[in-house]
Amino acid sequence: MMNNYSIKLLRTANRFCSFTGTHIAKAQYVVFRFKFSKNAPIYHGKRGIGMLRYAIRRLVTSLLTLFLVITLTFFLMQAVPGEPMLGENVNPEITQKLLEKYGYDKPLGEQYINYLKGLFTGDMGYSMVIKSGEPVSNIIGERFPISCKLGLIALAIAVLLGIPLGVLAAMKHDSVFDRCFIFSASLFVSIPSFIMTIALMLIFGVWLKILPIAYLDSWKSYLMPVFGMAIYPMCSLARLTRTTMLDVIGQDYIKTARAKGLSTPVIMFKHALRNACIPVVTSLGPLIAGILTGSFVVEKVFAINGVGKYFVNSITARDYPVIMGTTIFYAVLLIGCNYLVDLAYGVIDPRIKM
Image 1 (cartoon, rainbow, N blue to C red):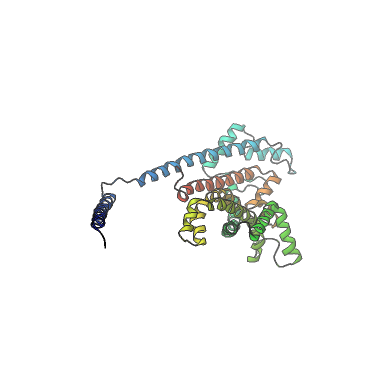
Image 2: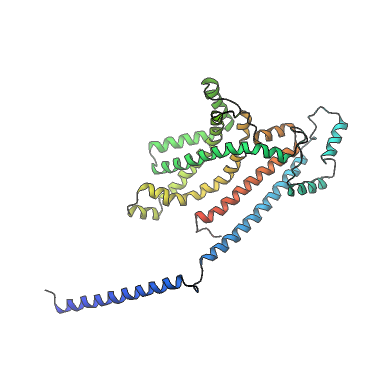
């Protein structure tokens, strides 16, 4: 049996809970009406304005960086000893006429202004040696799709295999799989690309004779070049993902997610990976630009007519317009990828101040 004091205490507690619950419900209703009313202030617009300002600032910085790259490339090429026709067996009169034709007989400042004007109109000059008289923009436009196709396949393999392998190694930290992963990734990152491509050609093309060693005639001819281009970024992304995941796994919110009973794959791929992928996204900028333009060594070894092969040929032939045009084209891709990566930060991590 309950005494009168206990009954009064229960009645008081019941009235308090009813009073509190009613007023909480009213407060929630008022907040709901205020939030969706026309007079409610729109706080999320501040972040949109901040994002726009951040994008404009980064765009201005990127354009200034590109201008500096163009300027340095032009004057460094002019500082190289010798003339563009030095390796050609032509008499001095023909060489002088060719220099006059391409504008290399004018003062250096005038050449620089003319080159900048040409770039604004899409004119990168004309090839002087490897494809004499052909516009550099046409050479890059014809060869870039080949390099881009190889690069996209290699990039897809690197991302789809590298990031999951890094997450799996972090989940199995200090296990046999983790140790084998660290050894293999460190080994493949340390091997230069030209040694890797030559080893692939010897094993699969010369000894086993199961894959073609040159050109892009069939789907089999893509295997060795794509693997040669994908192995380094794949191992780099895997190692970086593992390192960042190990740092994130020890955070308090991961422990809270485990305490709630969430499964390990959900914790790793939904909660931990999003915060761990910021350094990975940072490294993707230069990796994407480098892969899309093609590996110079891979294209040269496998005789692929991409941008990389023509860039190497232009250096050996002292074809200045092709060298400058290819360098600027690579710089545009690199700066553009970094700009997109910077914009992606705000989407991936809202905590980043814009």
